[in-house]
Amino acid sequence: DERRAKAEAARAEALAAAATRARERSERRHAIASALGDAISGELTGLGMGAARVLVELAPLDEAAAGELSVNGARLTAPGIDRAEFLIAPNRGEPARALRKIASGGELSRAMLAIKRVLSGLGPAGLYVFDEVDAGVGGAVAEVIGHKLVDVAAHAQVLCITHLAQIAVHGDAHFRVSKRAEGERTYSEVRRLSDAERLEEVARMVGGIEVTRKTRAAAAEMLAGARR
Image 1 (cartoon, rainbow, N blue to C red):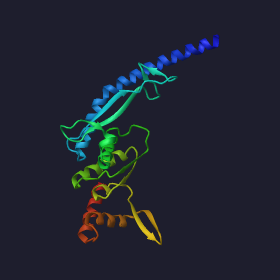
Image 2: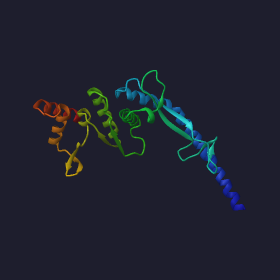
Image 3: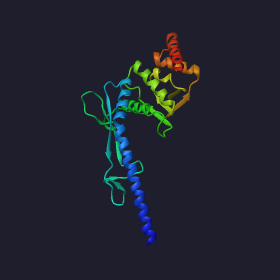
Image 4: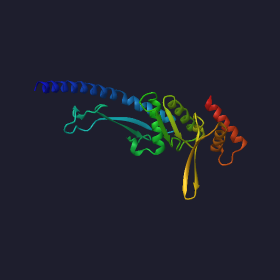
């Protein structure tokens, strides 16, 4: 009975300490949520998403079930008592809705890039994969995206699938993905390009099927600019 009483007292003390930490963490999250949303929205403007606006919505976790720990009625978990969700209003005058539900693949990829750009250097992730980050953008915006990918790559490895030369030239390594048919099977091949092969590939991305002396010169200038 004495050991049980001590254990119950220790549990109550630990729960009180955890509740205090959870409330403090929740207050800090609410304090920075607005600034985080504004910073991400600013990044999206430069990524060709116009007046898109991002909000960070915080809400208490669902009410604790029987046997679960709770603080102020919210379920207590290791990360705290909050549920965070990113909302986006793609155009001025539209209400913000869940990013995961309404964003296209390209918008989602650019939103992730904006988030990682704002939070660069934070978090445990060592690899970010961006696909369709160039969807629906022109050359000038693509160049901005390339620069922002470089910023993220200063803190984590970045794998980017792209069809635009303005983005591809910023990679430290360039891989080409191709398909070939043999008999009844189709095979995919991923191969790292040499410097000479990379020049040809960038020239093809710039000029299309027929690579000319002018497209090679443009590709060489783009690669040199990215290195600078």
